[in-house]
Length: 145
Image 1: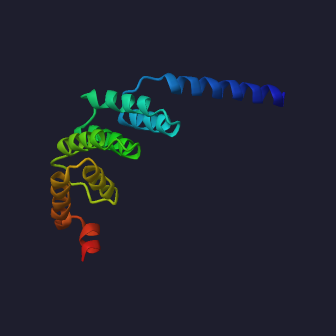
Image 2 (image 1 turned 135 degrees about the vertical axis):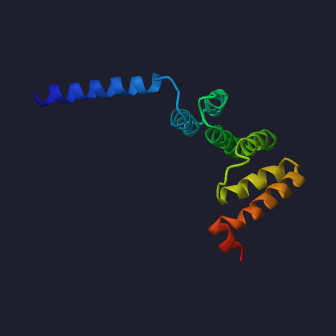
Image 3 (image 1 turned 45 degrees about the horizontal axis):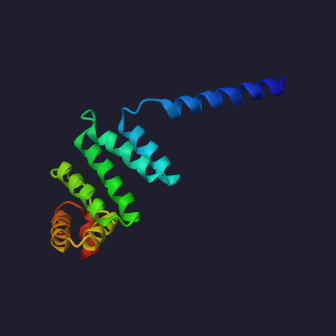
């Protein structure tokens, strides 16, 4: 009887995993998680395609689409595709232009991508934008003093 129960649970788990892998992507979390899983499997092109599909959907907020661009930029930076990386960072900043998001150490990587892509002026502009955030970002203000 126990073996039959375990077999039933295993079959149900298999059905769940199959359905989960085939479900349509409609929400930000779906795109983000699926792309992350693909990236972990080193299927970078597929991860990029999944995020780009999410970016095209207007059901996501600008901030969510900006986050997908940011994730693409980080992945491309790891792959040393600096110019492509900065294109996604540009799109991310444009979408989140009026959002007040706090400074993160991840922005150091963004600056690095712009420098490697030969876009020093843009790196300075982004750095200055981060310095302007000192007015409301307690972490940046205290770390720069």
